[in-house]
Image 1 (cartoon, rainbow, N blue to C red):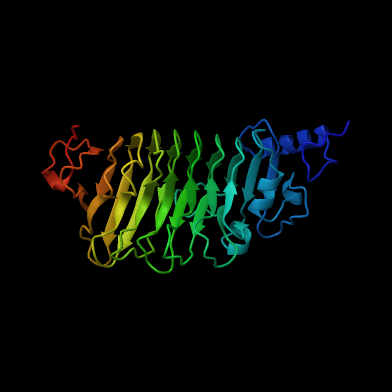
Image 2 (image 1 turned 120 degrees about the horizontal axis):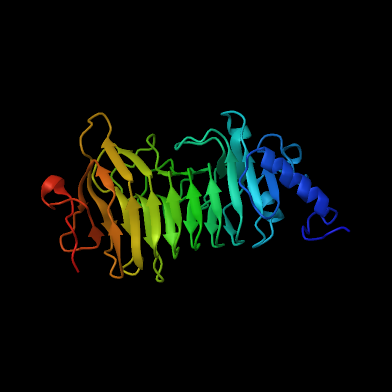
Length: 331
């Protein structure tokens, strides 16, 4: 009996999908209840069915199109070297990821920085994000997200999040426009709830943030961003001048709804050729009035929040005067 769940390939049988799942298990991919689809940015072909490494598709958007919403499918990004054409799951334009329940796994050395299984644009573009993630219960592992466009008049990021209960393991987020801009952020929370980040990195040691109010993490949205947890993560930045850059930036008083928690996380920034503390404040932007932020360990920032009386950051530092850190906030 032939099934037709995959509209792009109505001739794919249940047996063929089971064979593809068996191959994925032999490769050590995470267990899923759906079908794995393979992406090879060098030798893949979007006319393939994507169900084995030898029949991999070329682009991420094609692999995504093959997945069925809420069926538990997976996308495996293959990498073999360090050249751009053979380690990138390319996208030609930013797109909305509305399907839920998809697992994305990068086959590469699982470093925390610049993983070679990478999602990036095929060429220079003015799109503000690679992915706008609105689907839920999605998992990314061992993947690097890189956006290097030059947009300077709107918020620019790698992944814009409006997802619930999604997880990122060992992923790297780098938004590095060639021109420094206050609109730059490595990841953008736009109504994202109950998401988890573990052993992820944000930021680029090679990119000069300069004297701009850019940030690693940006919060926006009138519905707030609630109960998002970061564990064992890092954020890296360097500047040549000024003190405007921040680790986390809030764009509205209602951008937070509940807690944003950083457990065993380090945010580090330095000024090139000096080694001296570079930034005035880890938190910048509008004070949230509907939630709290648990402050991580910060290095190179003079204060957790330079605005007296904001009282939105909960810190483990014993004294707000010591090292310019925020003390325990009170309502």
